[in-house]
Length: 383
Image (tube, rainbow, N blue to C red):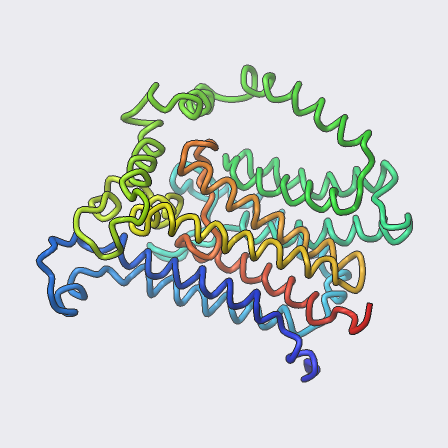
């Protein structure tokens, strides 16, 4: 059982920020997924008749499942993860392989369907496995080498644990999730003070590999997506449609927004695609404007800096790497999702943490929060 003294050391600040972001997501979903309002509604009942709360209820149920997982994660000292993570990691990789035997959903081998409206995405849960696996390998090297990641074999082992699942996810194809995996690895390597030689070699390989991948490995459809990212007007009715509509919705919100549950929003009228998942930020900014959108970004920044503080206070290198890995996952999601809604990043289907609809992603994020809180609860009392 958990020590009652540890319960007093729960990171309530992190939990408050996560809860605020989650509630913003629920309110946004209720407004965005509603039957378009006419402006003639006057009573509460008039609004309730037009609300589509199905997604809100499912998201709330997913939150309860994720919160249960969060409680399980914080019960035991995070050190107990070390002997078991290898088996969990292997199971996750096997699930990623089995996905190729399942029927494609939305054009990729990404989900195991449960009924007609529920699905499990193993690539999401694999993020946690990669974080813990990388934290274990990298922290072991740091413990032996004065807090640094040294030795080609250690770097190669950590690289393999990340790139194995990344390759399987790319073959689905899901480049967005692979991008998150790589970001997690980069953040963990950074905190481990990896040598400049590896950084220069990685930069050179990336500079040489991207053009080769574009011309020789990517299919024409994938090249078209990159071309449209650089210039959405090349195909405004198909591949560039999502970004153009998202940018129009964001711009229409102006400074203060049109307001939630107001008539005539592009999100309610279905002009914004994937309005409750990948492009929910566009619907939110349309409702609460530039000021509200900036406030959400500030909330994420506060959460990121809070987790950086937790990483600095961890009792060991393993705890520091765990928190930095979760932080890297959050940063990758926020950067990619908001970037693609405003046309600064390619469209890759990455959800906005704690806000976008999606059970697997919410579960993964809450497990990640559990790891951060676990490290904070078991920090040393004195420096």
